[in-house]
Image (cartoon, rainbow, N blue to C red; front, side, top):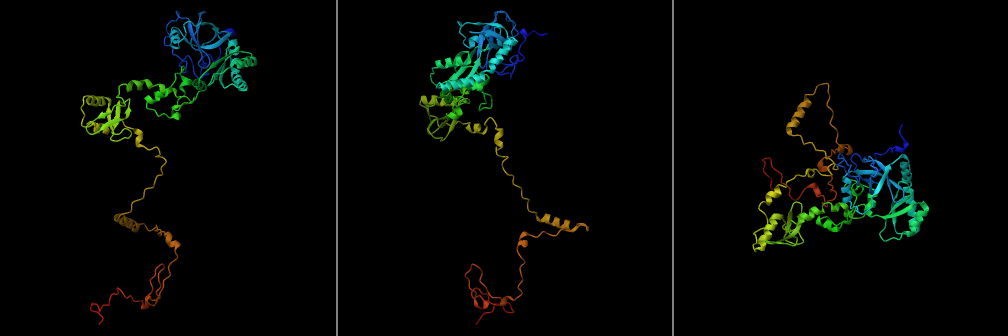
Length: 451
C-alpha cells in the first residue's frame, strides 16, 4: 500500500514548461532544458539543485536535507512567503556552471529545498494554476478601468496560492501602485509586478515562424539580445520591415545568429570605396559574395556595365599594382570563361518549371498518310472477307448543310448575262468579248484573219 504523504503526482515525468508535451528526463527540448552529461558522476560534493517553474522562471536551491533528487522530480522549495512547487531540471556539479552562465549573483541568497512534493502540495498547485486564466482576464479589466497604458500578458501563481506574479507590457513608464492595491484586495493575495518585452510575450504565446519551424523564443531561447539593423546590412539583407520583423513586431532574433561570421569575412575583403585602375577603364565596386569571397566590379558606379567578377586574392593583387603605379591591361582574368562554364554545382529544380502541371497538354496531330500507306489501305480494303461489308463514307458536314445544286439544262448561249454581286461590270451585247478575243481557226489549223 502506498502512503499518501509520499505519493508523487501522476504526471511527475511531464515537463512544467511544455505542459506535459515532453519528458524532462529524456531529451526535453524546452527553452530552459540542459543535458546533464555528468549524470553518471557522483554528486556528493555539490548539494545545489536547479528548479524550473512556469514559462522561463528558474531558481537555484540548496538540498540541505540530502534528498535523492533526479531530473523531473517535483519538489516543494522555500519562498519569501510560504513555499513554491517546481520541477528539478539539473543536479550535480553542472549547477555551478549553470549559475555562472546565467550571471547568478554570488551574494544572492540561496533558499532551501523542503521536500519532494506530496499529493496535498500538488493538489494546491493545480488549484492555483487553474485560477491563472480568470485572474489575468479580470486584472486586464481593472487596468483599463484605472486608465493605465499597459497590457497584462500572463499571471503565475505561487505553488501554495498565496502570491501571484503579474507579467505586463508597457511602452512607457507606468505608475501601478494603485493597481497593486486593487489587485491585492480583489484576489486576496500578495502581488508582484514584472515587466517583459514583446519578445518574451511572443515566446509565451508561441507560434510558427516564416521558416516553418516553431519560434526560437518559444523553444530554446531563454535570454534575448537587442537586434540592430546594422546586422542586416552586414549580411546584405533587404531592409524591408515586413521581412525583417517577426511575430513580436520587432527585428527577428535569427538576424544575429550569423552576423559574427559575416563580420569576420568582411574584414578579409577589399573595402567598397576602393576602385581598380586598368589601361582600358576604371572599375568600381558593385556587389560581393562574402562567403564565396568574390567581388563584382563595374565600369560605372551606379549601373551594371562591363561586370567583372574577381576573387578577393585577385582584387588585392590589382590593388597592390595600382599602389605601385602599375595598371594592368585588363581586369578580366584568363580563366573566367572556364569558370563561367563550370559553375561548380547543378540546380536540380531549374530543369522543371513550377507551373508545368498547370499547362494544358495539346493533342499531337497525326501525320498525313504517305502514298505508300494509301496504297496499302486500298489493298486491305479489297482483301476484306465477304461476310464483312464496307461502311459507306461519312458525309461531310458542309454537304449536309448545303442543299443540292439544281442543274440548269438550258444552253449557255441562251442564258442572260447577269453581273456578279459586288462588281460594276456591265454585260456586253451579243455575249461577245471585244478585247482579248482569240480569232477562230480554220480547218487547216491556221488563224483566220479578217480582210
